[in-house]
Length: 111
Length: 117
Image: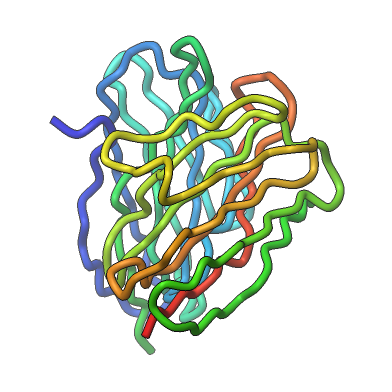
């Protein structure tokens, strides 16, 4: 089982749609959680950190369920510019900080 | 926001050449820096993790003598691909993380596209 698992997609949605990405992690000692986006042939960019209470940044909402070891990202009112690969990232301290990236979920938003 | 600069952006060179890539944190002190490589349409693959002033920790399957990492200061890490061959052609990306808290995210450089002819 992968340490961080994501649905690879691709997700093809029309502009204005709401889309949700799911992510599960296997290590219950995981301490920090993030969503990154990566555009084609570019470096990953931090989209948002994910907090236990859930957090929102404009059209983006992230949720964390520690009991189920599950993280989600909801994008409302999708824009063409949201097309990218979304990476679920988990951080844990195992005698040294370690970051584990999911393989990413591809999103295509179409006009 | 935190800025990480990576240089060069593109490298094209002959087989057998050694290539050095620099990664700098411009507005924060990077206690930990990470080096990744990524092949087209594939996931990021962590190569090594380095803490300032200590030896890098390499992931399984990554040759230490092939990929030399130096993290001499809190703002600079370098990756040297020694005697590069065509199979080393890839997208190399560094990232940096400041502070000791587990909630500190990583910030990525722009990446270096390495093409070995």
